[in-house]
Length: 529
View 1 (cartoon, rainbow, N blue to C red):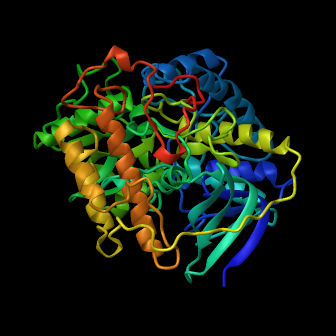
View 2: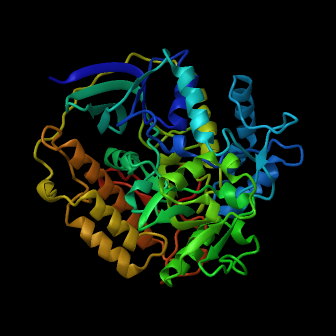
View 3: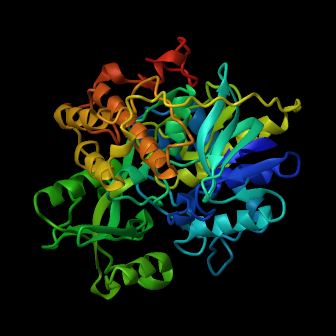
């Protein structure tokens, strides 16, 4: 028997954007948060670097704006960037007044760090390199007894009728199906870093929100832009965790095993160059057979300054006393996602997106360091303002009709393993791409049938594990199709066969949308194909 529930607002995901929105709505709306594993399984909890904000007297929003635009290759949506850098300090100040504690010096002033492509020290931290965890603990404590967070509840499908999202279908750990009806459904599912072998992302972050939105008919854009963090702790062919850019901000440099500085002469900012440049430079060294290390010998009290990274090193049996940390690039952040306006509204009525799963255009072709937590804070508040201003009507529960056995092209019994999927993406749609490699990966994915526009699933027979693979394959296919179409290199998208920026691609965005839903809609942030 299917359990049926009704609420005002459903939030899918449990990261910073999700819980920040829930915090704002909790006093006035009946809100439920659904997360497919545990509430602490998010990239937000893992965030080490901090939050970028122009709160210093020597800094200003215009400088932060300029740094964001330059890092994004001026492909950003200017209005989204201005909103981000102007409103960020205001929301952070409010959290501080509510009891969120950021790191301060002996005089009680906020300690400000510097990271790649920032012209000022503007990164505020909490718990040294545990900023994300401190913020998430703060939000979870605020939500206690106010908002119901349902763990181990996987969203399988969005209920959409006549381009209007009216709820979701879920499955729990016992494989019991439930329907949740709501006036508003918010995607806050994070990105898709888990589609790659080496990643900084939580293992749960595999592009579910992208796949759900695509099947629901929403527009998606900029999916070809996947940022690889330059420095994952990497030994014996395995990634152990992120080594924050803040370490290089404190003076650490990248060197080969022979001690040669890797970034010298590559970019004026050297080790603090934009992430895409640093990541490709490290990968080029690795491709030549060289090992790359982060030299931390110049950082005093490393253990005290970076306790989380120290713990990661200890767990990986890497001694910080040797002063050399073995590193390699790993999938980190998706600049693209579900098309939204500046309040989180998508092209499907009643469906919203915030955080990494959304694309306002704020990050352009390459996200500036420590702007991710800031995005979650600012745009969750934008959506909260919008939803709080709406006078709710009674929730209308439509009859949910899931098709049975209509997904003829899907070979459900022969889906690939998750490891096979991540290996394919890493080899052919990773840091460097080619027509040949992308085409090979596209054909490999298409043999499983997930790319068909009429693809539908019988929820009664497809397991949650297979749904996860279907979502992974769907999002991989969408990324690959966009990467094939953009015949240039820009920001985090690098084509070895088209290594230059091509002017005809300036402000030209690639839209992905299921064919039966395309109706000549304009992309929301002002530029289209």
